[in-house]
Length: 96
Image 1: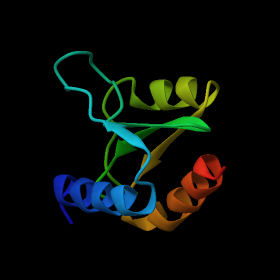
Image 2 (image 1 turned 90 degrees about the vertical axis):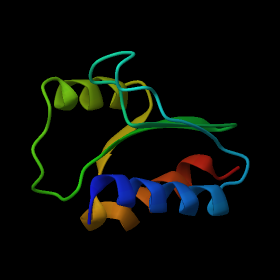
Image 3 (image 1 turned 180 degrees about the horizontal axis):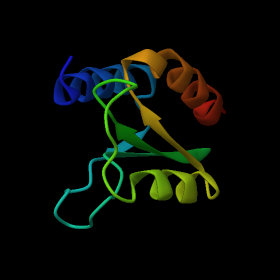
Image 4 (image 1 turned 120 degrees about the vertical axis):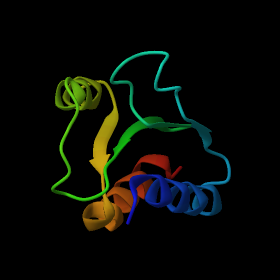
C-alpha cells in the first residue's frame, strides 16, 4: 500500500473514531522532518510519522524527532503492520 493511501485511510478512521480531535498535516516544506500528522485533543496530543511498511527507510532526523517528541507527548511511526497498536494507544490517550 502506498504511504499516501494509508495516510488518507487512517485519517478517515481517526475522524470517525475521534470527531472532536483536530487534525493538522504540516507542510513538508515548512520544516524538514516535521511529523506527517498532528492530532490535538482535550486530553493530549499525538505526532505521527507515516511509513509505507515497517521496512521503509527513514529520512534523516525522523528517528530523532519521533524520539524527541515522544518525551513530550505521544509520537510514533505508523505503518500498516502497527496500525491497531497505534489506534489502541490513541484510544487510551484521547479517552476522557
